[in-house]
Amino acid sequence: MNAHFLNLLLMVVLVVSLDVQALSPHYYDHSCPQADHIVTNAVKKAMSNDKTVPAALLRMHFHDCFVRGCDGSVLLDSKGKNKAEKDGPPNISLHAFYVIDNAKKALEEQCPGIVSCADILSLAARDAVALSGGPTWEVPKGRKDGRISKAIETRQLPAPTFNISQLRQNFGQRGLSMHDLVVLSGGHTLGFAHCSSFQNRLHNFNTQKEVDPTLNPSFASRLEGVCPAHNTVKNAGATMDATVSSFDNIYYKMLMQGKSLFSSDEALLAVPSTKKLVAKYASSNEEFERAFVKSMIKMSSISGNGNEVRLNCRRVR
Image (cartoon, rainbow, N blue to C red; front, side, top):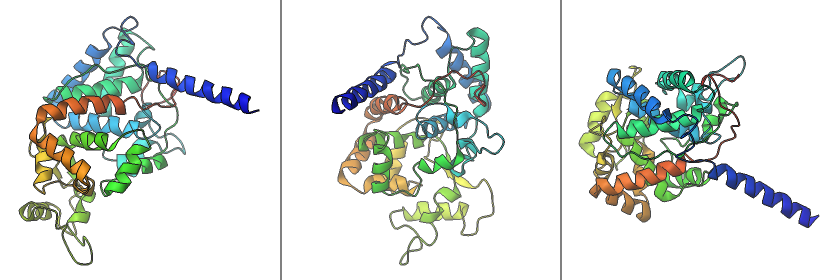
């Protein structure tokens, strides 16, 4: 019985290993050699009309991989009684799904039924970074698309209010280290956050303090002006760093100055090991870029449960 169990276990390990090894930068070299180029063109075109596209695509990929692995489940529309991931509370503000749709349409014309939606999203996230002045990299490809997408599972996403212990557990469950946490948080260099994501630091912070004392006072005052206690402006918020359209290390510099938005950003300074990494990347954009590429490849390789290539990224066949 024990020998039978061990054989089954070895088979499972082998299948998982083969699944990981199946991802390769050369996956579409013969079946769809223009795949990278087609996705890049779709991202470029969208960026020329909307400067918020890069942040949207990078965040979309992150949210996809942290729920059911990188299987394109975040792209599926709600249907009937099933409320999909994109309609879960943390994902309501996700946008630019049309970029993936446009890339998929072009790919289906060039090489029908070949390139998965999950791979398109991973490629688009890479392009979002590269076209914003950040690094580029060879994306390992070969992901398959999943059929299950549930809004309730978006509870698994790390919240902007998380402390360092919660972040450690959340990332660790996905095989990501504290180093990966610090590096991937640098993706906040692109984007915009609504007041609801950081108002906990501005109003009734705790029983002793109204405002989070770790916030730079003048920075906190500016945020309070944009996000008053009883804010009624739906889209009010702030940019994640001072150079919102450029992929750089300004996020880390501002974090060191007490000018981060989220509690989860400030949490990176809570322990010596992560604080040291923040300081390292604040002082060297080159070091940050090198590390970001490695952590992005690692995150985008989180195995999903997909087993097909969807012809339409918004719905299953």
